[in-house]
Length: 308
Length: 235
Image (cartoon, rainbow over all chains, first blue to last red; front, side):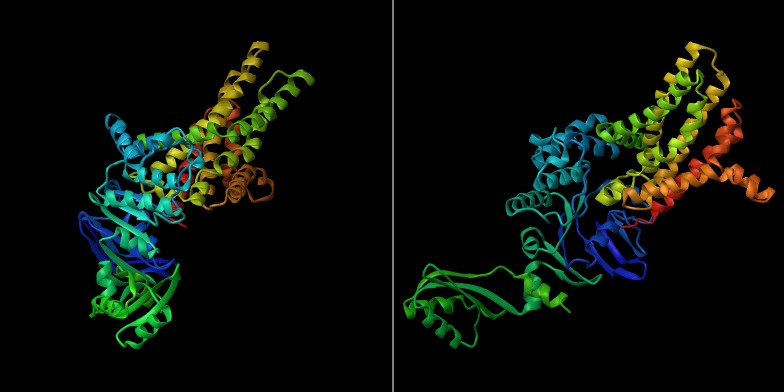
């Protein structure tokens, strides 16, 4: 569906994107992960036809951004970083403007607008001017304008930056719902976001792709460690002593909560230490309050790949 | 073209929804009104001539003031990225912006028709000169508008856009007034380049296609410069 071929983008002498290639399959939710300035936004701007590529090209449904930028723009919904919107415009007027500029038939405009208003939960704020809205609502307006022409592809540049935790959850749910029917490319530098929303991750660093795979894939491939949470009620000193005596486990972190001690443990990727920990607790007579394997933790992968 | 018109309507609504439009319009009418009525009441001259004489000078400030936001504000806020990833060509966006500015300028000029009607009702009005003058003002306003839009496309700062726009319009306004200091052949060229020279021609009531062509060329040229500036997609 989207094919990026040897894409290079230079700003003057600086290479923002350096010969990257990847494809995105229909229906996939792809996460771009990378530190600020890694080239995530630049890549997205080339895909959406905002910036022309310096070298290489991007194909969307077989169309080339160098030649068919207009047709590609029709198939893509785009939400740029920081959600730029016209602050003076009421929401309804803004959506009507985008619908008209996108050439949606006057007959279909009302139903399309209603569909995105319902989907993004904007019914209550339609008459309000955009500048009076909270950031969460502004983000929804941004998503609504990106969805108004019912595109197959959605490109979202840092869609949750600057939102409060509740708003982040709302927007993520919305993105996940959209991701069930559309191809989505989203960028972020927030790691849990990728795990929450994406089928596949591309880690970009200094304009190059340094990793490509599912979040779990990357975790096992790069970090070689497995993380466990182990919580017990018992003599914390004794527990620590027993655990640190073991060579196959390493204590990464210890915290106390109301008499319960929570250990963050690391083990080799190929061993499952959970049965062992359970037996230990039984033998020693500790009350087990928590025992689970943490979901793939991309933080290590990310840091090891992008700190160099 | 229809996309350009949709954009123009949105821009116009933005102008008239904000106080800026009314402040600029009021100031424009206040200034032209003052020059008209001092002529009328203090010097007993019922003529629109003085208004016609001064308007190009007001345009130096007035036009950059209404064009400074066109692209600079879109660049500053980042909305330009959304605008230029809509399925429209860059030139449609430029034409849309210019249409809005032209309608705004035409509104301001139309408001000065009051003076022409006053003069016509008080005595004889030089019909040819008045028609030529209004045509000249509209053409001058649109071409200066195109220059102001170009200036706005160069920067993300509205004040800088105002100053650049003012600078270019000012130079073109003055260029035919320095012809005394340069050799003859160059003088002809400079005279031809001056916006005010062609305006004076039209103001004589002689509607010459060369003068109209000059303003059309200037507008198209400024539009092409804007297109070039936008194509660079600066951050």
